[in-house]
Amino acid sequence: MEGDHPVRKSVNHRHSCQENHSRVEEFIGDLRSLNGLAQALVEGASVASKVIFLVSPSATTKPQTLANAGNGAIIQGRPEDVGVVQVGKTADFATAANLAAAIEKRILEAFLVMNVRNAERVTAEEVRLTQLELEQSLGGIFSLLTVEFLVPYLNRTLVILQRTNQIPRLPKDIVRPKIVAGINSLGRGQDNESLTRFMATVAQTLGPEALIKFVNPAEAIKRLAAAQGIDVLNLVKTPQELDQAKQIGMQDQANMDLVKQAGQFASSPVMDPTKNPQLGEQANAVANAILGGGQQQQPPQE
Image 1 (cartoon, rainbow, N blue to C red):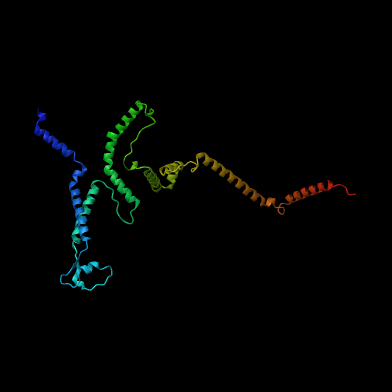
Image 2: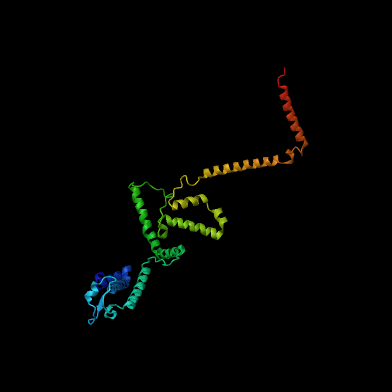
């Protein structure tokens, strides 16, 4: 048959092999070059670190004397009779090291390895932008896998588990499985950072008034505590406790207002006997009535 022709089969096999190249095979040249340069640098560093002293054949200093001399020892000889073997390949090693660094950087970029700038002042915003760049580079892959593989696989797994009664049946209008990929799937730390950045963006863009108006403080506090793994039980006040504290505060304020009004009334001219003669006469009448009643109640003296 025509489909079994050996030439056509070999061509199809070659095309299929070319389409299925891995990422490592595309950069196999850089990987091998980096491996060779690393080996050369290691061997060169080993040779350069070896110390060998040379003694002139016509020198009066004996090699054995030099070898047996301790640190700081004094022996007879001339400095020009003794020398040290030097490789003298520093420039060549620097060239190999620079080429290895360039190849390593290219490989890291090819495999999307996050490389934060090595400096004294690297801000968190710079690190976040680097993470977002990596996520955007892999966002297409994550989205494709989520739509074409993960969601159907999850739905099928749930159906099988529900049919075998391994899990209870989940109502579709309440439980909706969602697959999160990328930086958002790293855990609570990302939730905390996202929530904090969202509130800061709202406050900077629309003003603190919009943040107070549209954001529920109680819910924001609960989410921040959950993102940091903190139990809010007996730590954050409930709405009932907030209402009770508000009522107590209003009652205390009302009592303070009454006390203030009573003090102002007592210091008013109406309550001053010198300025209000009727108040003085009433006070004298009351005092006389009390004193007179007290004298009438006394027993007669014998």
